Length: 178
Image 1 (cartoon, rainbow, N blue to C red):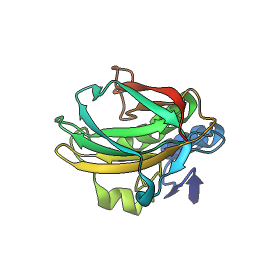
Image 2 (cartoon, helix red, strand yellow):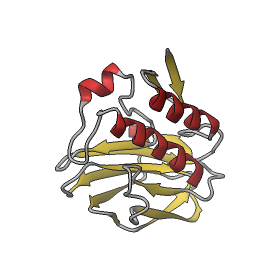
Image 3 (cartoon, rainbow, N blue to C red):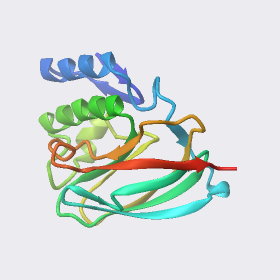
Image 4 (cartoon, rainbow, N blue to C red):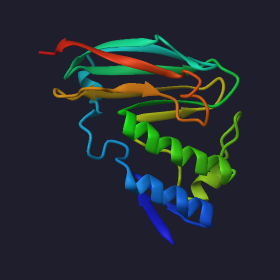
């Protein structure tokens, strides 16, 4: 059976994965039903923020941005384990955590590495527009334009146990970008 969950497509191959998929479908997904923003245009970047991901932290720990601003996040995993940088609401992060538990259970990832072949074969390549998943030592970027009516957004890591361990950062809107 092929399922699609907020940008993820995968073949459900077991009761556990189907249960996780059902829980994910029942909750708002990655940008669905929440106005957090959109992928930004590389030719209209307002500023760049360097982000460090380590063991249960983001640096900076608070992100001051303006509504409507386009930010290039340069994200570097300096930790010893896999980490994620995801922009979303509490509900979106909760849904995403369910998907990560299914990925761990299905052997698509461990704490230290991603099995891209298994992720690809299960249709769970983690290509969400609002998130990046990094192995230790990796660097990537995400260009994001925050919605003009965005509220209650945070950055979190959905790797099992990481958000509960404190790996989330607040986004503070300091005004409207003109």
